[in-house]
Length: 153
Ligand SMILES: Nc1ncnc2c1ncn2[C@@H]1O[C@H](COP(=O)(O)OP(=O)(O)O)[C@@H](O)[C@H]1O
Ligand SMILES: [Mg+2]
Image (cartoon, rainbow, N blue to C red; front, side, top):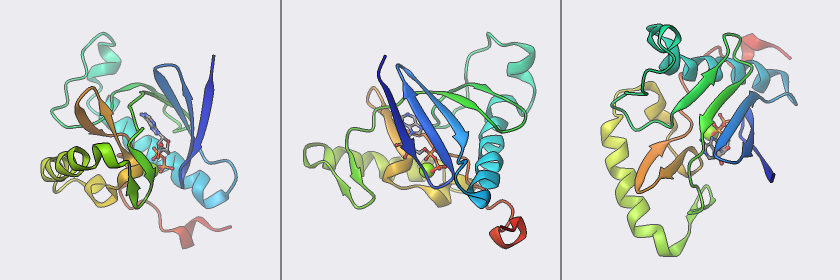
């Protein structure tokens, strides 16, 4: 099976089949700690009220445009998430021409829906993806977290 690996600023992501596996970036101390924090922040959406842990078969029912988490460990080492399509994305400033209009329009709506949440401050092309024709956030771990200077080197 084909395995793709992508590096975000704080996490390393393995894309395998229909799922992605997110681990903290092991190549830098600060990004490692922040990767853990952000995995835990995303875990909040999976288990904060304990409902999915008590009832694992319960459906993902957040009324927010977030990629669904299938599993998240309590240490922030691993997150298993549904894979979204990101083929429109070329780099942080460029998206593919044929989908440009739709992506920009959907992105505007997405921003309006998540206004006020911490992760709304980290919306960019590399943090969004499509599930069918729905645009969702695939990175919603941002919350500020421990300041880099307190993490040390
Ligand atoms: N659910 C997903 N579906 C498809 N690609 C993903 C998914 N999650 C992450 N990726 C890819 O991995 C990259 C890094 O993941 P991300 O969660 O943004 O990590 P970081 O917090 O380090 O920015 C993303 O820019 C995207 O290309
Ligand atoms: Mg990201």
